[in-house]
Length: 234
Image (cartoon, rainbow, N blue to C red):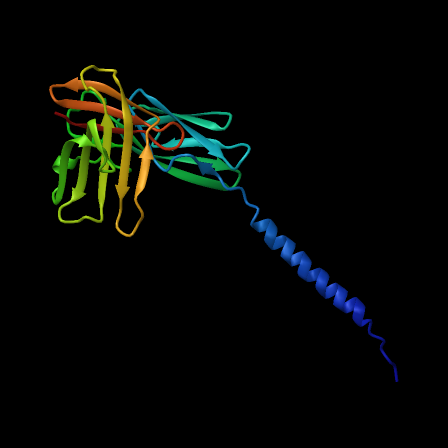
């Protein structure tokens, strides 16, 4: 009769090694590069360009489909997206087998279009006066937080009868000269079930005046896409 000597310590060691090996392989799966863009949507005018910053990977390629609406050029960790013609498309950034996409909207000439509108807030341009069930109002002497400011105008866009949702945008200035650098550019957004979001513009420019209608750009630097407003003042 043969007696088998089993090295229990060796078996245990082998078992533990196999667990560690599997664990290491699982962790490696979680080490996939995470491509991150500094914007969630891109709105650019025909003939104009915006810069998108990419992080999380060392190298990448970028493309836009369809190709006829915009071009994408890569330099270092930034993508320069230039509008070609009005339309909608998608920017795709690829690093190895990993990709991330971002919607692209190319709008017509910002200054030629006289419709009241908000660009850069949502993926689509918002035309407040054409939206049924919504109100779009303006008030002088207050900002988007409701604080009294003598030189300020606030525009309020909200569903009728719904205090839980609104988009308010305000700025202070004289509003008398095209190219005027305005002050206190502020956006406050409230969505149902979400805390209020306040966006403070790094710079706000009065681009154009036509009668009482203003074309205003709220610039946020690299923090997010600029917001452009066309609306009546006083």
